[in-house]
Image (cartoon, rainbow, N blue to C red; front, side):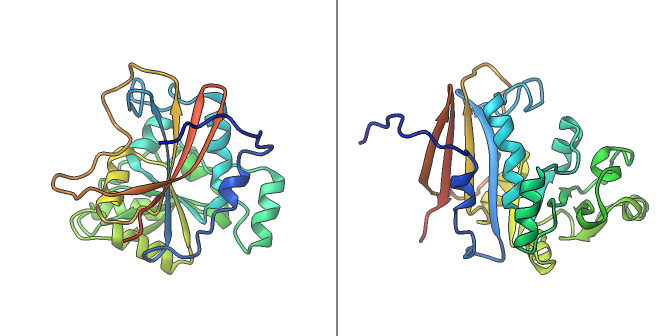
Amino acid sequence: MHELQRGAEVPDALTPYLAVDRSTPKHECWVTGHMVAGLDGTAAIGGRVGSLSTPPDQELFRRMRQIADIVLVGAETVRREGYGPGRLSEEAQTARRRLGQSPVPPVAVVSRSLEFDWDATVFTGATASARTHILTCEAADPTRRAEAEKHARVIVAGRERVEPAAALRALADLGHRVVLCEGGPRWLGELVAADRLDELCLSVSPLMGGDPLPISVTPPGAPLAGFELRGVMAEDDTLFLRYERQER
């Protein structure tokens, strides 16, 4: 056992995350989960993450999108959190252009029901180079699917439900090699169960007493997944942990 103590100051909190080599995923693309939890493991307060996130976490959350080719999120999280298109600084956009990426990553929403407010900014505020994607399945209502295609790029990935492996293969086929998953807990659990989570960046907020909902809800019967601790940082009372999937 080792006692961890506060070390040298990190001038830019994003630098350690930008330095990670994500070029060799286990499967078709590298998947990074980025989540926040309270000290008791809660993933939300009153159904939303915003009240759980501290200022240092909020800042890192916004900037982490720089690492991604596309941001993946469940439909319920989009509805509850009022999601909009990604926003990055001019400096970050320039760095992405140098790597051949779009200035900001598009958002990909996972939905079987296709029940959305099409006036939401996640659809109306997206640029042509980062048009919002919707991942759905063959069983989705055809009328709603036709409406969805007016507002987003629709991708069918699965028959009765959106299947994680099929969804990620489809994103990889579009050239998205690094996928940043921002929740929600059930979709993250689906990715873990499908052995598709390569990395977890977990912010631990110094709060207790939120909703009885963990950061990941895996399907019944899913095997345990092991991860290795690769990085620890802290700002004020917020802890930032980075894990990678154990090699087998």
